[in-house]
Length: 397
Image (cartoon, rainbow, N blue to C red; front, side, top):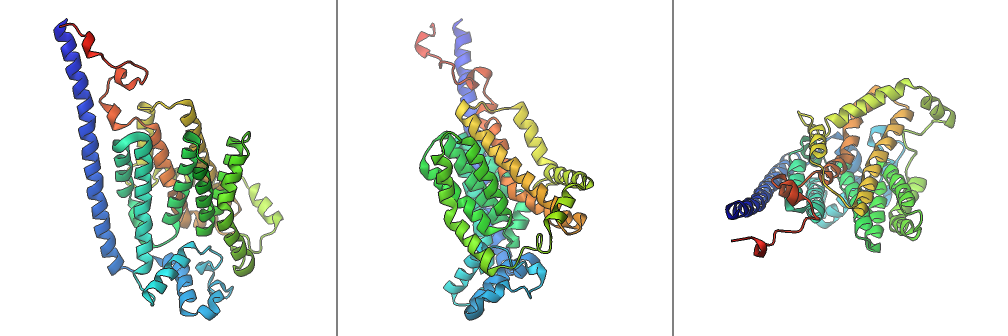
């Protein structure tokens, strides 16, 4: 009898030591990958400072217009510019590039890359911190590792486009709402609204996100209207910037310019478009992140096989988190339905980037639902939080 109980204590101790060692290993791997990412980022910044076509034809072009000709800065939004420069796109990224030009007193070619790499690091850092807060060091390290080795994260991170900054802003806003539900504080809600407003000031897709997140807040807190009002209050200033820019300076968006209500409605009832969009979206979600293997579906399987227990409050927060992700995808779906361009062309050149904008949300949602490394080696008794720990004093000798 004595031997059995001593063995039980020994097994319990071992089961508690293994996860701790695994967490440390995962954290070290995360730090190594972070250092490698910084190393490659510095190389790219000096060898390919201009980024992709969208970078220098859309975002950096506006920054150069404003910096080089401040008297006529509005020419950056001229209708005479080639349509692929998208003069109606919001100014969050160009203004930040412009400020770096000002600090350096010239158009530093590395300035846009500094911003791109900076957003890459804060995205990984925030994802790590959020998961660390709710699921511990091991799960946070897994999240950071998966993000750092995601092929599209590196490609888009170095491309200098607005997709990665938008992905970061969307993740922060949604995560702050999660925090506000689980650990209520008005500051979380105000900041969530502020970042939702920044999403609209970063890229046109942010307008979809702010609509989705606002509606979600109203539904979630329909009996506590002060909370949705706090969210809207946080979003007001960036929204004012967007409204002023869109109504006074920017030309009409190319997706809606020249389209009548009748033309838009007509596209909504061409049901063959729905099938093509749905199949393309599912395919892009299956291969989300640009992996050679379907990582997201595999992670979902692990989350189903090793589910994490949540209390009722966090369950509500998790449902809201997933709802915002799903509704954002639905908004993107609707834009493809009404596009005036060739549907195949539009999907081919934009769908993967749109999916990447919510990729950090999808990855975070899966890891929140999945059991942590601390629990991988635990038996069912240790996983049960209601179980009373072993009292050594009651063990017979």
